[in-house]
Image (cartoon, rainbow, N blue to C red):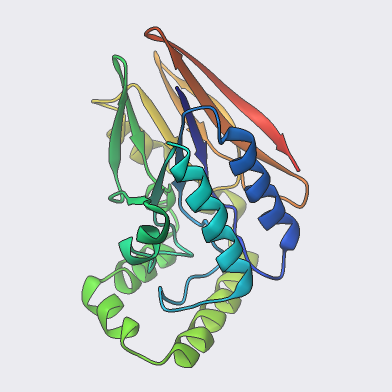
Length: 239
């Protein structure tokens, strides 16, 4: 069995090469008995499950083929697509995971999350995250017109870009104390968000950061489990 972990694809019609790369990934792993875990920011923005477009329909169709072949798709929301819910995933038998999820592969306990909650030094972002992720606010936004949500999301994206330009690089990375606090009862932490792919050794444990998807390459994590033995590798995915 193959466990595949990806994040920060930021798919959108403005970047068709990233879409082609994701579809290529599905095709390449279709016959490998794959459990695909997408740890947030799958899409560059998500304005609601009632949004439809030709580029999105193509992705859904490939995901249907992928899951009909016996593979599984799991998704955790990120800071760009936190409004995506099970309604969208039902179209291809996908599974919505909670913000924090413990996966067990053999005797190894793996914690999965997007990673933005670990960036506790970025106080202004954490304050914004707490407000915008409020379930009541999300429920209200889902009832607003699609056109309004599109304008709102575009405004958030512009402010996010401007905010990052003013912040120190290290502030937007994970806080080490926050990492140590979540490592107590697990063997391996896997997350994305920071766009700094790396395998970090923490005593006898590991923290693996997934990479964001660029125009021609991404850093993805593959864990193969055969006869109780697991192999782990952070690989370059070219497309």
